[in-house]
Image (tube, rainbow, N blue to C red):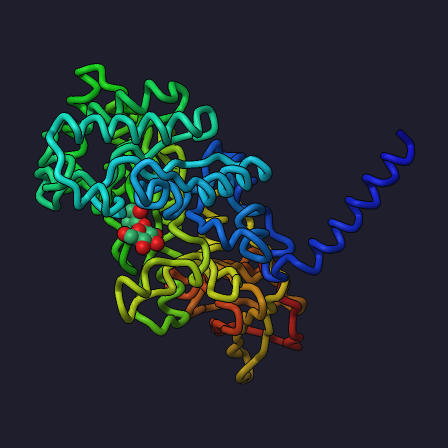
Length: 444
Ligand code: 9MR
């Protein structure tokens, strides 16, 4: 017993030292997103690729998120490439990783028009055959992971933009009730998994989300098992729908959960500090909308690093859509997520430099430059104490308040974000008499 305990503490020490060197320096001092989310009763998830779950990618996926969604591994084309021949390797691996890291798994996805095996899409099936193929698929896959999946995206992308049903293998072969049947079969295979319908461009109130709303309402009135709706949220920089929270709330009011299931915010490349700041604001408003509605279960990002994102290959010239860059450095969006989840950011790695740029008989102009290296800020406050009765009379590029000798300056709406390797400057005029010593600025 004694030697076991010694062995364990040594192992823990070795692990801690290893983690110290392995963890990206940029968020050494920050509370992991998963702890912030858990404190708010929310899920913060990421889509993952199984083969990448080692090294830094695995460290971040395990440390920062409390939910994983296989990006591709559970799709029909992945799990049954040849009829009757199954390949569960990557899906199993992701589930095992999640269990080892005390994470939920979001199953994605059972019924979709895309990424189906060619034997299925090229086959000729009667409606009855198609129905039993689908029922079998759902029973087999959901049954395999029974008790291990928190939520299933049972049906993916059933609607057109105008709110009519998308013409797919399923709709054309089985009619609209393929949705109700799929949900019913999934419930039978795992009564404990939350069952979702998931779609894109349904984040705001619009024709498509209203069709989804009406479908959910109808399913509920018919007693069909439906627990939630997934709003994918593949967004474009600066275009978070203004009705996002209202839309989440209207689904919640129907009696279903809501999850943001595939969040990313793409921008025209190359990225720059202005775009990254806008992206941080976009991430923050999506997270804030979910935090504001009790029945919003949480937010999953569709890949946490720009090195593992679907965007560049699908939208040439666009990218940088995730919260970490290709080298696993957290971007302003990362800190924005943390802040929306109630975290306070670490200012380690950022400095504030105060200088007097001009001075005359009773007045002076001062400026403060905030610069970050290896870390970034999504908002800031610079504060100091004037030692000789100086008084701020006017400030720009920040909102400054002074009470006695204590000065506190908060970022303007447009310069809260300070990326790693970047800086922002604000200025002010003040009065002085006698002497005008330089104060020490504290960053918060
Ligand atoms: O991230 C997935 C990417 O690797 C695949 O090539 C792509 C194929 O359509 O699917 C991506 O994931 C999609 C998800 O399953 C459903 N919503 C849209 C996602 C982005 O295309």
